[in-house]
Length: 173
Image (cartoon, rainbow, N blue to C red; front, side, top):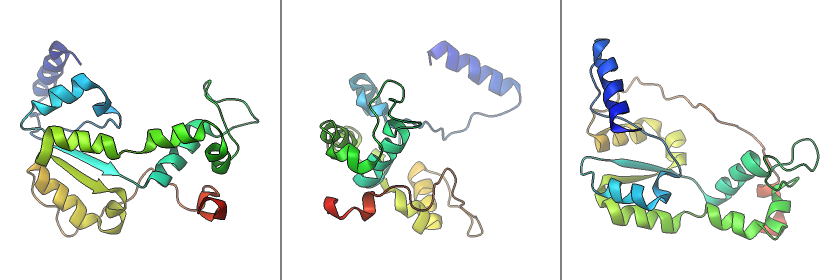
Protein backbone atom coordinates (compact mmCIF):
# COMPACT_ATOMS: atom_id res chain seq x y z
CA UNK A 1 0.00 0.00 0.00
CA UNK A 2 0.96 3.62 -0.45
CA UNK A 3 2.01 5.63 2.60
CA UNK A 4 -1.14 7.79 2.55
CA UNK A 5 -3.28 4.63 2.49
CA UNK A 6 -1.46 3.29 5.55
CA UNK A 7 -1.83 6.62 7.36
CA UNK A 8 -5.54 6.75 6.49
CA UNK A 9 -6.03 3.21 7.79
CA UNK A 10 -4.11 4.02 10.99
CA UNK A 11 -6.24 7.13 11.59
CA UNK A 12 -9.46 5.15 11.11
CA UNK A 13 -8.14 2.45 13.43
CA UNK A 14 -7.27 4.99 16.15
CA UNK A 15 -10.60 6.84 15.71
CA UNK A 16 -12.38 3.62 16.69
CA UNK A 17 -10.52 3.63 20.01
CA UNK A 18 -8.05 0.94 19.06
CA UNK A 19 -4.34 1.21 19.53
CA UNK A 20 -1.85 0.26 16.84
CA UNK A 21 -0.20 -3.04 17.77
CA UNK A 22 3.57 -3.12 18.13
CA UNK A 23 3.81 -6.46 16.34
CA UNK A 24 2.31 -6.69 12.87
CA UNK A 25 2.35 -9.51 10.39
CA UNK A 26 2.38 -10.00 6.66
CA UNK A 27 2.26 -13.33 4.86
CA UNK A 28 3.67 -13.64 1.38
CA UNK A 29 5.45 -16.75 0.14
CA UNK A 30 7.00 -14.94 -2.81
CA UNK A 31 7.54 -11.64 -1.03
CA UNK A 32 11.34 -11.81 -1.16
CA UNK A 33 11.67 -12.75 -4.83
CA UNK A 34 11.63 -9.10 -5.85
CA UNK A 35 15.05 -7.38 -5.63
CA UNK A 36 13.55 -4.04 -4.53
CA UNK A 37 11.64 -5.72 -1.73
CA UNK A 38 14.79 -7.47 -0.53
CA UNK A 39 16.69 -4.16 -0.53
CA UNK A 40 13.95 -2.41 1.50
CA UNK A 41 13.68 -5.31 3.95
CA UNK A 42 17.43 -5.31 4.54
CA UNK A 43 17.18 -1.67 5.68
CA UNK A 44 14.45 -2.23 8.28
CA UNK A 45 16.34 -2.95 11.54
CA UNK A 46 13.24 -3.73 13.62
CA UNK A 47 11.85 -6.20 11.08
CA UNK A 48 11.71 -9.87 12.04
CA UNK A 49 11.10 -12.54 9.44
CA UNK A 50 9.70 -15.98 10.17
CA UNK A 51 10.14 -18.44 7.34
CA UNK A 52 8.25 -21.70 7.59
CA UNK A 53 9.64 -24.43 5.39
CA UNK A 54 8.53 -27.92 4.48
CA UNK A 55 10.18 -30.74 2.58
CA UNK A 56 10.62 -30.38 -1.21
CA UNK A 57 8.43 -33.42 -1.91
CA UNK A 58 5.60 -31.81 0.05
CA UNK A 59 6.10 -28.55 -1.84
CA UNK A 60 5.93 -30.20 -5.27
CA UNK A 61 2.91 -32.20 -4.14
CA UNK A 62 1.13 -29.03 -3.00
CA UNK A 63 2.04 -27.20 -6.22
CA UNK A 64 0.69 -30.12 -8.22
CA UNK A 65 -2.58 -30.27 -6.32
CA UNK A 66 -3.02 -26.52 -6.42
CA UNK A 67 -1.97 -25.68 -9.97
CA UNK A 68 -1.43 -28.71 -12.18
CA UNK A 69 -3.93 -31.49 -11.36
CA UNK A 70 -6.37 -32.12 -14.21
CA UNK A 71 -9.92 -31.54 -13.07
CA UNK A 72 -12.64 -32.86 -15.31
CA UNK A 73 -10.51 -34.36 -18.05
CA UNK A 74 -7.29 -33.23 -19.67
CA UNK A 75 -8.10 -29.53 -19.73
CA UNK A 76 -5.41 -27.18 -18.48
CA UNK A 77 -6.37 -25.31 -15.31
CA UNK A 78 -6.02 -21.56 -15.80
CA UNK A 79 -4.06 -22.06 -19.03
CA UNK A 80 -1.37 -24.11 -17.27
CA UNK A 81 -0.54 -27.67 -18.25
CA UNK A 82 -2.21 -30.36 -16.18
CA UNK A 83 -1.40 -33.99 -15.39
CA UNK A 84 -3.42 -36.87 -13.90
CA UNK A 85 -0.87 -37.68 -11.16
CA UNK A 86 2.33 -36.55 -9.48
CA UNK A 87 4.33 -39.29 -11.22
CA UNK A 88 3.11 -37.92 -14.56
CA UNK A 89 4.34 -34.44 -13.59
CA UNK A 90 7.79 -35.71 -12.65
CA UNK A 91 8.00 -37.82 -15.82
CA UNK A 92 6.97 -34.91 -18.08
CA UNK A 93 9.61 -32.74 -19.78
CA UNK A 94 8.38 -29.77 -17.71
CA UNK A 95 8.61 -31.75 -14.46
CA UNK A 96 12.25 -30.96 -13.77
CA UNK A 97 11.65 -27.21 -14.14
CA UNK A 98 8.60 -27.37 -11.84
CA UNK A 99 10.61 -29.24 -9.23
CA UNK A 100 13.51 -26.77 -9.48
CA UNK A 101 11.10 -23.89 -8.84
CA UNK A 102 10.10 -25.48 -5.52
CA UNK A 103 13.66 -25.84 -4.19
CA UNK A 104 14.31 -23.05 -1.70
CA UNK A 105 17.96 -23.41 -0.62
CA UNK A 106 19.39 -20.52 -2.64
CA UNK A 107 16.47 -18.24 -1.78
CA UNK A 108 16.91 -18.93 1.92
CA UNK A 109 20.66 -18.28 1.74
CA UNK A 110 19.95 -14.93 0.08
CA UNK A 111 17.39 -14.03 2.75
CA UNK A 112 19.76 -14.86 5.62
CA UNK A 113 22.61 -12.99 3.95
CA UNK A 114 20.41 -9.88 3.88
CA UNK A 115 18.88 -9.95 7.34
CA UNK A 116 21.01 -12.36 9.39
CA UNK A 117 19.69 -12.95 12.91
CA UNK A 118 16.49 -11.06 12.16
CA UNK A 119 15.21 -14.15 10.31
CA UNK A 120 13.96 -17.29 12.00
CA UNK A 121 13.79 -20.55 10.07
CA UNK A 122 11.15 -22.99 11.21
CA UNK A 123 10.21 -26.42 9.89
CA UNK A 124 6.49 -26.81 9.35
CA UNK A 125 6.37 -30.09 11.29
CA UNK A 126 7.42 -28.35 14.52
CA UNK A 127 4.07 -26.52 14.53
CA UNK A 128 2.35 -29.89 14.68
CA UNK A 129 4.83 -31.89 16.77
CA UNK A 130 5.60 -29.35 19.53
CA UNK A 131 3.25 -26.38 19.13
CA UNK A 132 3.62 -24.94 22.65
CA UNK A 133 7.40 -24.63 22.54
CA UNK A 134 7.43 -23.61 18.86
CA UNK A 135 4.91 -20.78 19.26
CA UNK A 136 6.51 -19.61 22.50
CA UNK A 137 9.93 -19.50 20.80
CA UNK A 138 8.41 -17.51 17.94
CA UNK A 139 6.79 -15.10 20.39
CA UNK A 140 10.16 -14.58 22.12
CA UNK A 141 11.82 -14.00 18.74
CA UNK A 142 9.23 -11.29 18.02
CA UNK A 143 9.69 -9.69 21.44
CA UNK A 144 6.37 -10.89 22.88
CA UNK A 145 5.73 -12.92 26.00
CA UNK A 146 5.24 -16.68 26.01
CA UNK A 147 1.88 -18.33 25.55
CA UNK A 148 0.21 -19.67 28.70
CA UNK A 149 0.73 -23.41 29.30
CA UNK A 150 -3.04 -23.95 28.97
CA UNK A 151 -3.09 -22.54 25.42
CA UNK A 152 -4.48 -24.96 22.84
CA UNK A 153 -2.96 -24.78 19.35
CA UNK A 154 -5.31 -26.26 16.78
CA UNK A 155 -4.62 -27.14 13.16
CA UNK A 156 -6.44 -25.29 10.40
CA UNK A 157 -6.32 -25.51 6.63
CA UNK A 158 -4.89 -29.02 6.84
CA UNK A 159 -5.63 -31.99 4.62
CA UNK A 160 -4.94 -35.27 6.38
CA UNK A 161 -4.56 -38.70 4.87
CA UNK A 162 -3.51 -40.06 1.51
CA UNK A 163 -3.38 -37.35 -1.19
CA UNK A 164 -1.26 -38.85 -3.94
CA UNK A 165 0.72 -41.89 -4.99
CA UNK A 166 4.03 -40.04 -4.62
CA UNK A 167 5.12 -41.58 -1.31
CA UNK A 168 4.10 -45.08 -2.40
CA UNK A 169 5.72 -44.91 -5.84
CA UNK A 170 8.84 -47.10 -5.59
CA UNK A 171 10.11 -45.96 -9.01
CA UNK A 172 10.86 -42.57 -7.48
CA UNK A 173 13.01 -43.95 -4.66
